[in-house]
Structures are given as structure tokens and as C-alpha cells.
Image (cartoon, rainbow, N blue to C red; front, top):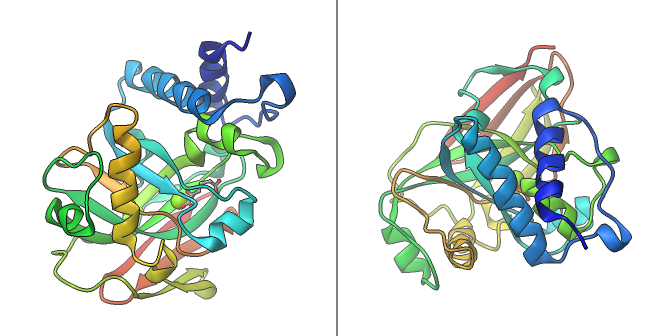
Length: 255
Ligand code: OOG
Ligand code: MG
């Protein structure tokens, strides 16, 4: 029988020590439910080490992302305070296996949200919106995984940067986004790539966390998912993303 608790230790240690691991293949592969159970147990280990839960990340909410990794189901993961990189801050390659960056939209929750909700109900629970970058880092060798693997690995969550928050009183359903590395555009897209409108990702988040007994809590951040394919990071790189009406967010890779 598969030992899910053991798998949780494996993915948590791989993330903690930035070490690549093989996929859970064959008789060791997980059903989606098993994978979320592994994810929950691995995050519990991080919380035991003193990290604080700060929100949720949605994944594979755009075609570009689904195609890039070959998995075509919307997934979610858990964010902790330790994953947050300050806007304009820097990271070290040594803390990651093979990190990539992708432009996202972040929501700041002002009221609890869980279960089946409408777009309108979801927006009523949002306090602010911001441009964001997610640093993803699959712990699996060669960034290759099946659905169960990536979900168990906290949906490749590893870091995130949030720009200035603003009131969610603008139409952010189709905002142009340019992701630049060292001043050169490397991905160009639109917030519309995120399920047609990022608010649909928030609706999906409310539904999906409810399945696991969770509520999007006031003060939590919800990352809506990458609007474009992710770009590989390298030592010395400066990353900046500019989102129409939301502004810029960036960081650099020290070494
Ligand atoms: C899986 C995580 C996907 C997104 O925004 O679509 C994700 C991966 O690409 O490794 O974070
Ligand atoms: Mg992402």
C-alpha cells in the first residue's frame, strides 16, 4: 500500500533542500485525492517548522500553462509566508532546483469565501488586487510530472512576489501583460488568458478549497495562475512584469 505520509516527507524534504526527486510512477502514482492529502501533510510539516499560512495559489488556469507542462486540469496549492519574496527583492538559485517565473494577478481577501459562489459574490469578498509574479519550481527531475505528482508537490509552488495593491474597482478581465528578463520581453499576454477572466480562478479557488474543508480567509492572498508560459530563471537575471492598469512587479536573481 502507498504510504502517503512518507510521500509527504519526500516532497517536503525535496522542497526544503532544493533537491530533484523522481516522479511517483506506476504503483506509486497518486489519485488526485491522494495527491491533495500528500500536499496537506507536506504543508503541515512547514507549519510545524513555524511557517504561517498566507493563502492559495491556483495553477494551470491558462492554456499556455497547460500546454507547457502537459497537464490540463486546474490545480491549487498552499502559500506560506516563507514563500513570499519582497517586491524588488532578490533570490538565490541555490534555494531552487530549476525555477521558472510567470506573471499572475493576485487577490487580497477582505471577507471569507468558500464553496460554490458566483463571480459577483467572489468579487464582493475581494479587498484589493495586485500584479504578481510566481516563482515555480517543480521538485521533479526535468520539471516533468503527471497530475498527481504536481498536486502532491504543492503545485510547484515555491515563491511569489506581489506588487502594489489597488482597489478592485477596475475591469481586470483583459489587461495586457509583458514579462521581461533583463529588460527584454520574454512573454506577452493578457489577464484574459486566466480562465477568460481572473475572477473565475477565484471562484474555482473557493470551490476547490471547500472540498478540503478550507475557506479563503480574510487577509489571504489568492494567486490566479500564470497568464503566459513560465520563463526559466538564471543567476544574475532581473525580472519585471508590467500589467496594464495594475503596474509593475519584479525581483532579481542574485546568484
Ligand atoms: C504547475 C503549477 C502551475 C500556474 O500558474 O499555472 C502554476 C507548474 O507549471 O509547474 O503555477
Ligand atoms: Mg503559477
